[in-house]
Length: 380
Image (tube, rainbow, N blue to C red):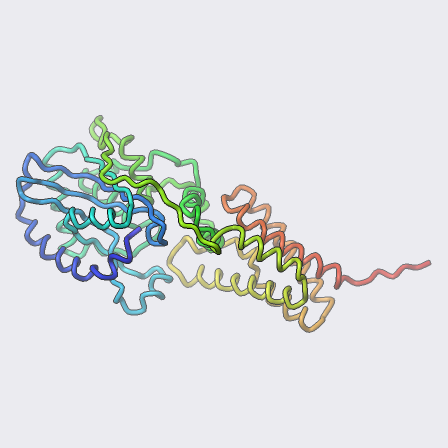
């Protein structure tokens, strides 16, 4: 949700600037002209921007304040950055940007920006301002990123609710959809990202999406939220608007996926079977490892291993050794696993995207079963 390309160059500078700014801001008393608002930044076509971004803006022309508080920063110089991100130990933190700099970056990226002003009294605006600055200055803004439970949007919700003294902001729309169903459309025009997230996510994303975890969800919920019997943020102001554009890729699309699987089926050789099942089994081992290794709960309890079954690796061993009995038994076992998987998948958002893989696997397994089954003697 954070513009990573921008943060690569500016994270440390903005971090020190934010500390300096918050020290100064501790003594500012907001005027009656002050406004506080939630900023929702639109989605982009890069992997870091597929879900959009959320921030808080504090504006007070009397005190020459126009700042955006952004809970989506992290330090690329963190030792073991990739392992920590994969494990779920990577620390995110808040920074404060000048509004002009913030909006210029999104204009440069051709990403829409909307603003929803919070209709709260001056004393609560002051309290939110102080809570934000205290959070930055004390280090309370540091948090361990979690895809659903702790991110730039949920942190904004939490600090506003803390300021209001109650859980005022909660999810008002799409509570009957699963997290997986909510996420699925965000990967449109990014086929392999959609396929990858579909097969690596486990049961957590199949729960009903009752938490606000995406910027657009907060944006839709705010107009429906009331504080003291009045709408909390009744109006949406479009600051930047860009028509959606979609990337065109010769390879990142469903056609290369289907063509590749079709070629495997057409070639249909033993070497193809071994390579295909080995890859599927290794992916299954990776999913199981990540489920135990990572603190990202979204990766745990991954039933997709019924398709990407590590038992396929054992099948490959016996198939390579030409052991007909165990090749047959393991092929039957894996076929049964895939039938179970199909039933599990029937009400899931990613049914059709993995169905070609499932059909290819079933086709190859049936071939192995027919080739290696024990011949039944015919007595005349």
